[in-house]
Image (cartoon, rainbow, N blue to C red; front, side, top):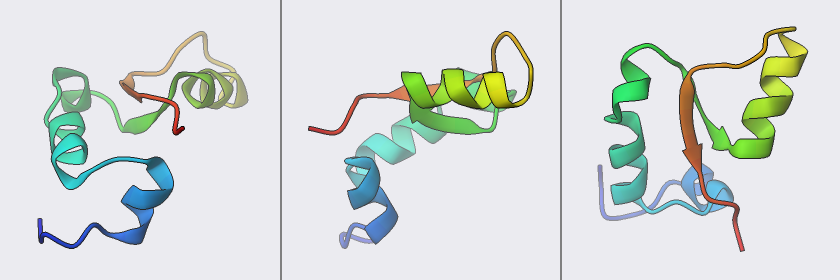
Length: 61
């Protein structure tokens, strides 16, 4: 990834390195979601599932 952080990563409050680490996480071998914990819960509820497989990221401050 280039040194310039794409705008979407700024919105997620992630650095390029943090995003790469999240996408390489073991959970991403089966999941497709990278989001804050509350958003992961809301997504699961939207899908009418108890949970979704993905990677939780910290809340942006």
